[in-house]
Structure formats: structure tokens, C-alpha cells
Length: 287
Length: 116
Image (cartoon, rainbow over all chains, first blue to last red; front, side, top):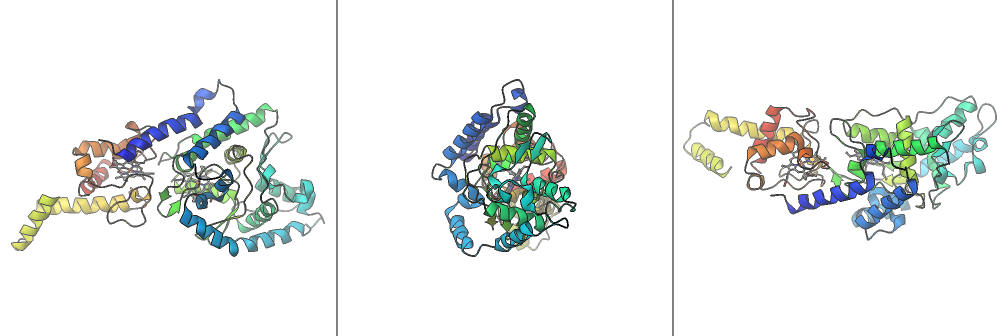
């Protein structure tokens, strides 16, 4: 009765998802084990795509298909995000009204540090993403924060990613129960189905990477943060991580959260942590 | 479908204006197709290749030979109403349970599916 394909799907999703998400609420009593999570997560994707090398995953949909990969190589010759990197660089060193610059807010003047974000800030007791850190820097220096989904934020993060290309993602979970909890909340958010269409982030990016939704090829969740921010031809502009998360939620007829909401920052923490070791490839370009 | 086609052809050939019964069935099929393709309604093309639809996705199986695979209407209604009953981990949204489509709309889509 069931088609072969559906049968494969039934089997696949049951096994694979059970292994990754292990009925989340039930986990509460169990130990939260990010190291084991990251191992299982990588194993899942490496087995699902045996032809790909670990570092291939960081190019999102372009890693999923040879034709698309060719497009990507061609695009990289005239990268459409170059203007954003240039603008970001200029913005980064230009003094605020008080004479300071972004350089003063970050270790190593902000160069080559993208792979350390998000981090868990024990003073603030929460996950701080690169986008949040940039706006905190602005506000600490008496400047108005930037809109999280607009070009200025995209330019700044594009530049910071560009100076960090090739560096392995290096997310730390400090020995602090709040950090572990943030990680776990992010994980639960990622696997929890919601909204009218009953989608979780994992529905698309774990169960269906490489598949097409209409004309778009779904990126695998492994390394999905490494290329952010991304230039999308379809947007005709750069998109920040915030913009992408909000767009994914709206596309599913879900009500998106506010950019940089706790849950979004936690989910970014989770996704970045399980990609530890994979190189930063941002800014990315997408069809 | 085949019988309906033959009937219609015969009816047209005989110069008879379409009878109300088949005309109703036909428009239910057309309505079902519209609902299935409509991005704000079924949007089934996001996941399924369906004859006549542009830019289909590949998350689900191609919808073909539906009538031979699912001879009973109720099976199709059940799949559209809530496929998570059959497969708790399916990516297919529970269109009926989550009130994306009402009973009449599901009915029309089933009519359309049976023509595939």
C-alpha cells in the first residue's frame, strides 16, 4: 500500500529523528550532554551524505547538489556580498561620536573572532550572539542600535565573518548551569513542531536537507550558521541571521519571534555548538 | 476519470450541454485543483510533484496513480486531514486538524487527487 519512497521515509525519519531528538521532554531528567549531541548530530549528517566532506556542509544548499555547487563556484568569482564586506570594514573602523570604534568592544579588535559567537556571557547570564554584541557595543557608546534585519547589521557581520574565514567554529559552554540550560532550550526549540503547518526547524533542515521546497533547496542543519550572513539573489540584498530565522518562521505560517529573542539566540547557540570544528564560510551567497 | 471523460465526450459529441451532475463533479475537481495549488491554502506543490503544477518541491512523493493506490476516498481524506496519525514524524502538515482546510475543501481536493 505504502509506496517504496514513503516506506523509506517512515523508516528513515523514525530512526534518525529518534536518535537526534530523543523525545525531548523526557530528557529533562537525563543528563544534558552537548558533547554526545554534537557527535550524534555530525554522524547523522555524515551518514546521510557520505560523499560530502565535513567542510562541505558549510555552504548550505550549494553542498547538496553538483549543479548548484558549480553555480556557487561561479558566483564566488564575483561575490555579490563584496559591497557588504567593504561597507562593513569602513563602518568598523569609523569612530562613534565619542571617538571610540567597534574595535574597542571586541577582543583582537574584532578581527578573526566570528567563530566564537554566540558565547554565553556569565555576567549577563545569557547567550550573546554577534549581532547582539554589535548592538550592545553601539549602545554602550551612546549610539542607537541597528535594526537586526537590515543592511547595516548585515555589513558589520559580513566583514567580521570575512576576517574569520576558514577558522573552525569554536563555541564554548562554560561550566554554568544557565549556559547548559540555554543550550538545551535552543535544542528543544529546534526540534519542537509548532504553528498551523506543524513544522519544527528540524522538519526542514534535519528531515529534508537537499530536498526542494518549490524552487529552493533546503540547507542541512549541520554548519547552517557558518555562512551567515548571506546574500540572497531572491532578496537582492544581504540577510542577517535574524532575518533568516524570522523568514523561516514566517514561511511556515508561524508567527515569528522578535529578532534576537531569547529562543532565537538559544537556537543559534545550539546550532553553532553542534557545528564546532567546521570552518566559518561567511558571508555566503545564495540563489 | 476515464468513464467521466468518455461520458463528457459523448455528451459533447451528441451536442448535449453538460448535465448538471458531471458539471458539478467537474467544477469540484477544478476547485480542488485550485485549492491544492493555492499558496495560501493547500500549497501541496511545495512538497509534491503534481501534474499541471509549476515549480514543485520534492519533500513528498509525486502524486500519481492516486486512485489505484488509495481506492477509498476516506484514506485520502485521512491523509490530508492529519497524516501524523499514519506517520507521527511526517513533514506533511495536518491540514484538517489544524484547520488549514475545511471538510468541503478537503473533499474537493480528494476529487482532484482521484483524477491524477
